[in-house]
Length: 271
Image (cartoon, rainbow, N blue to C red; front, top):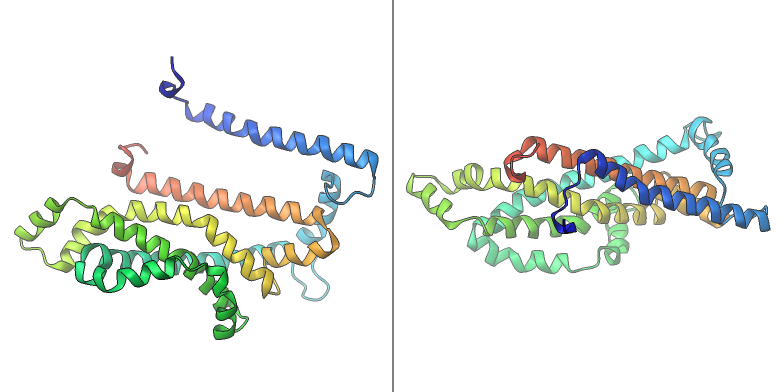
């Protein structure tokens, strides 16, 4: 049987997906052990014991100045910024994308503006955001929104514009208004695509969040990573990076599960 025709069960898929991760961990441990055998004070590739010791204080020992458990405080602060940015971007994409995709006059008026904003590197706008909004939370959230919302808007607008014209004509024949077309015809077909757009935007959203926290923040996952880098504290940086990857994977899993459960018709009826 050709590989293109092979189907992998869910349990086997999980096992096969874990193999490369396990191999990478084993490779890291082997290289780290060799480096420490040659130089016991090596900081570049810390051994698991060193990472556990470094993270223990951040996880379970309150900070002397703030009284907070720094690891969990960093996680909470970063997730609040991330979800707020994703939420604003999602609502903007849904509203503006529907208008651009369904209404040609709106698309002709604002389509070029959205495209122009989408091609601007968001990181280049970071100094402007800090000048305009200060160094508080607003600028960090605004960077996430500016970074991902235009892409999501263009994706949703493009999807709406490709809906079968027959659906629009039939709805109008039955007396549907523009508002009813938007709510009853376009919206239900857009929601699965919107969740996929959020999934695709997760990676860039994390990049913009970490960048903003690295430049102007006093708490957050990105702030902590860039704070300890001056000490070459890889025993903190690596666990933080792994935690960010795990959070991103969990959010992606929840989005996939929600999409399949809520809109099975968009996935061939598979739940």
